Amino acid sequence: MNVIPLHASAGISGFESPAAEYSQLSFDLDELLIEHPSSTFIGRASGDSMQGVGIFDGDLLIVDRYVTVQSNDVIVANFNGEFVCKILDTQRRLLVSANERYQTVPINDYDTFTIEGVVTRSIRCHRPSYLLSQS
Image (cartoon, rainbow, N blue to C red; front, side, top):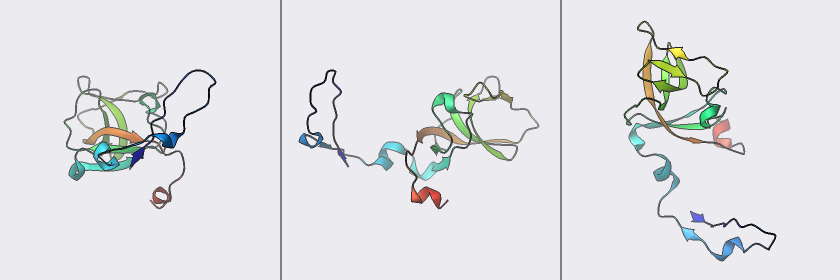
C-alpha cells in the first residue's frame, strides 16, 4: 500500500503535488487491524446505542476473543439470546450504552450472559461495498 503524506498548512498558497512524495508501509491492513487472526471475527454494528464511543449503525466491529476483558471495555456479548455491543462495567455488573438515551442494563444471576469478545477496532465504510451487501 502506498501512503501519500498530506501536510496541513494554514494560508491560501497552492498545494504541493500529492505524488511528489510517498512511502511504502511495511504491513498490510490485516496486520494493522487484527492482532490475533485465529481468535478474531468481524461483526456489523446495528443501532445508535454506542455512538458516544464512535460506533455507528452499520460500522464493522473487529472483535477479539483472545484479549482479556477489562472493566470499561467495549464488548460483544450474548445477553439472554441476543447479541449486544456495550461497555462492560465489571465492578457493578452492568452493560452500559454510550448514548444517554439508553438505560444501563444490570447483569443478573438469572440472565444468560456470555462475552463473545472485546471490540478492538471499528471501521466505518463511507461508500457501499458489494462484499458487505452480499451478507
